[in-house]
Image (cartoon, rainbow, N blue to C red; front, top):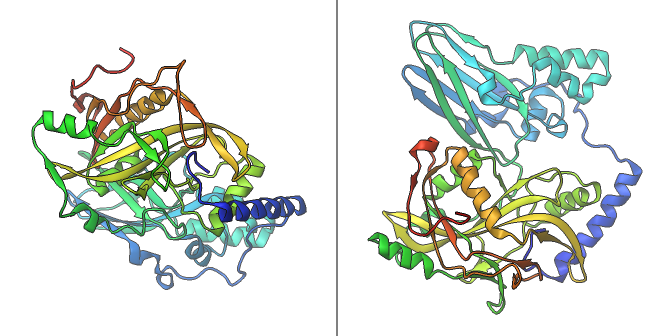
Length: 431
């Protein structure tokens, strides 16, 4: 779980029981999923293409869809999700007079060939079943060449990304290349922000439009300094970042930069958290605990897991009532988990790196290198805390800071490094 206030003794009790149950199953070696033994179903009989998205540019039309774990099992009679393999379905309509080439490395350089994916399936242990799966994958794989006037479709087998699948489809023609960017929601996870009515929140009648740059700086510095507990009594982690952009801009920018969504706290996510804790494995969508700003828990959380569940960067965002040129202004908090410690009430909680400014700068650089950042500046508002006189968050972890918060204008369209505008509002930290 993330640092900060926790969800109560009931969550702690459930987590404790799940940890014990997970440990028992791990010791017993209970196996995972299995084949249906009913054979693959025709593509037309599986409904995943109802969620397909289509883009068109310069005479080429690309449609993409991503089947869920259950739909993948129907399509191939194999539990590829359990093996970390996720099929992506593409259809390319070539309206040009010359052939075009699909470049799978642009979609994901770690893609699996059809034979390789078949070998990873549980069917590979049986020669006949393994050959059947391999033949099916080969027959339904995406062609690399689409002739003039032709339409070709098929699957590319990629590493698993639950939640939202972000990828590019690169098409090379005789004269130029085309790139299509897709963000496709895949059923299966209970994501924390799915229940929020973003349209209602974005069009809030009480929203305050900011005008001159001086007004923006003053308004951003007047936002709360820190998160709080649910009772709004104790101060927690510093609110050290501001993000400006529509919900779609924020969503696509962080997904493009490789940040993962966060699951809500429920039975399945607690189970996966318990297993990850016991095995030290990675859980990319691990829930984070609730921290509060404006009297409500975070609207959305993102995270970047590292080698295991104990080490990750994660952030929380709250949409404020401020608007700049019609775009929502979000206040946020980012920290780096560097370990886990035990607590009496919640069993475990993450320990954060006390140098919270470093993690703030990581986000700035990460969005810039991912071409998701259009403009950046710095304002005050957090309040400085020296390394020898640190403040503490709600779980007692110390932190120190120069007191600045970074202001990030995100973009759903790629922005090159030399296209980022830097605003000289405050001296950049570490100068």
